[in-house]
Length: 328
Image (cartoon, rainbow, N blue to C red):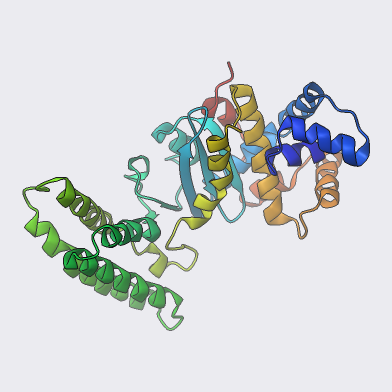
């Protein structure tokens, strides 16, 4: 557990891990031995990873994000019961639908507006990403009143929607009516600008303004902007999933990523299990983690499999890990 936590969560290199073990515990551990330990533990936890994928798939709300990595990409899928991070998988719709399967996922997906997320029946697009583009324009062109007006209009609609979401006086009908008002406000901010650009952007500078305006209009017409106003368990931003990938993004920039498929599979399993245990253990300590895992082997049933049974789910049948990150 110590070796796995330090490598997969703290992101220590094998060299630094071996130095620490030697310095603090006078334990001589070769890098090959440390790798063998990680391989053994990740192999034992593969079934737990499959169970976590099932827990995410049956969740009411899932936050998802992805970024480039040394091998293909890394994805994060976060729900109220599970954390699944997949390193070394493809950055395409096949990865998304393998975790959130079309025939079983009925929840709300909170994400940015990347093309891979488009077309889902229930979605909440991240307001932070939308606002960020408007803010960027005002910083680049501070003298442009139109850009400032767009930013101010979007910010006002967002603040009003946040106030409504937090107001406990609204019932379901009142929230639905308020969403209609918010959409009308947003239409006033954006649609007049869309009608002016009916022939498309005139030049590259105009495109910088054209694209974010039309993006807001498109997700509004798809009804993917105000799910958080109607439902209290949905958030307006995807910041949590974005934060969960910061470590992987930093590793990519510093060359600290796995260079092999075997390493990516190993790290995927270990990180997913550790991060999910953080959700469920009152105190995330080595002692508590060891006690938890020992109990799994003693009872032949993990905490995660018990959750699945509580939801009426069958044990995992298809090997998602092999599909997501095929072994060589």
